[in-house]
Image 1 (spheres, rainbow, N blue to C red):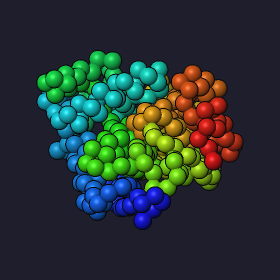
Image 2: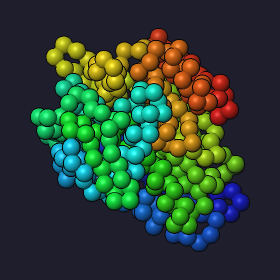
Image 3: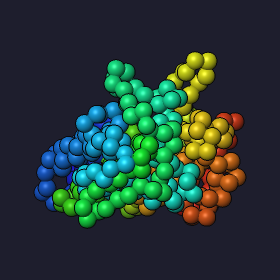
Image 4: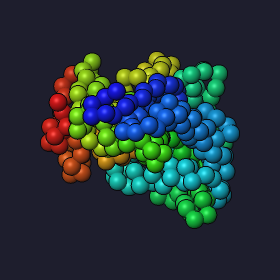
Length: 309
C-alpha cells in the first residue's frame, strides 16, 4: 500500500532488445497484476509490428514494398506519422530513413541474437525521403517512396511507452509509468507525492534525479550500441548529413518533453548539430535537456532546472 490508500504494482520484463518496466497505480480494487500483464503483452505486440529484426513485421513489409501503398495497423500508421512529424520538428536532425546507412556501417544484427539480421532490397538507399512519405490514416495505408527504408530506432521505444501508459489509464489505472530501454512515459497519479521521481543516466557515469508530473524522458548515447567495423569503432547515432557516426562531441543527451516519443526524437539534435546550435534549438523549443560532452562536461537548458532534484 502506498500513500493515501493508493496501491502500486511493478513488473520488469524484456522487449525491443531492451530491459523494460511498468508501474501501475490504483486507488481502487482493480487487478494490478492483470494491468501489468496487459502492458507486457501490448509492448510485445508493438515489437512484432515495428521490429526491423522480424521479417514478418509491418515495418519490414513497408520497407520491402517501398513505392507501393500498403495497408497496416493503426499502430504502424501512428509510428510513421510520428516519424515524419519528428523529422520536420527537429529541422531534420532526426531522420527515420537511415536504415540503409546503419546496415552499411555494420549494424545489421540483433543485440539479442547475432544470427538474426536485417536485410533490405538492393534498391534501398542509404538515406530516404522523409518528406515524400505518404500516410492515409482513414485507409490505414502507408506509402514509402521508392528506395526509402525506415527504422523505428530513435522513436519506437518512446512511442511504445506513450501508447502503453495511456492504455493503462484507459483500462482503469489512476497512474502509470512505462519504461523501455531507458525511455519512459508517466501519466496520472504517482505512488507517492505529487510527482514521479525518476533517475536518468545523463552520461559520463552520472545519474540525475528528475521530478515529473506527466510526460516523457528519453536518453540517447554513443556509449551503448557500439561495434567494431574493420579498424573503426562505430555507434548507432548517425549524422543525417555526413551519414557517418555522429562526431559532434556529445556522448549523451537526455530530454524531457510532453511525450516520450517527442523526448526521444529531440535527443537526436545533440548528435546532428554542434553543441551551441543543438542547445539553441532545444532552448527555442523550451525543452528541458542535459547534454554531456566527451570531456565529461554537462550542459543543461534553462528548463532543466524546473525538473532536476
